Length: 240
Image (cartoon, rainbow, N blue to C red; front, side, top):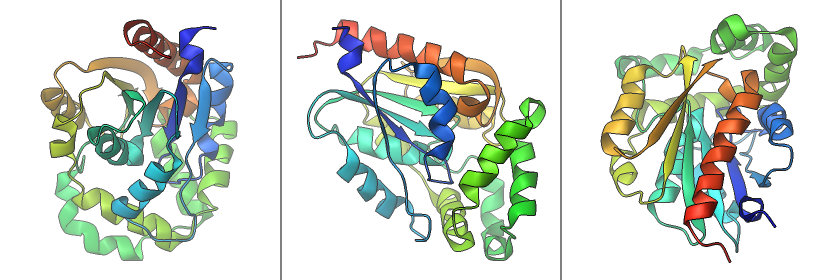
């Protein structure tokens, strides 16, 4: 059996938390690995600490695995990886951050409570997240996922981003790290990527021609890069 086929890829979702948006990426993987999608409650306004507990309880009980933290879930993936759970072989960060990527917005946190969260607002947000890569299919997929989540839950997650700081945990990670950066990411700026790189100097950064929703807009390229990363891990670390 191919060594990488024994590795489970644990997927931590973006702010919607549904895991639904991973579908294009999972199709592109073509059953290359075992895949486990972790989901977050749609109607519970939980912060990073509570969501991290959900992730920890969902990790494979035995066998090797690699964690992928997408966007909002990056700090969770970092914190979990920093604790060196048994079986962890690598960490993948996708369009994400170790601390608030837009620090100037922290002072405006009080406005989150009055943000609209209806279908029209969500459609507008999807345009910003997809940019020129936007298609009707991608917009509808995004809307169908996010509309499942209550406004209170989304606002709680936004507030969590404003105050998160996982830089100390990032420094404690001792497994290979891959960062997938979107060339046209309008959400996570280059400065946030550079911060992660400055702490994890051995981290490999791969830029993909994509918007913030990289795994959705460029699933084939993402699957290729991630497959190569996991294959390399499988060949350098014994898997029993």
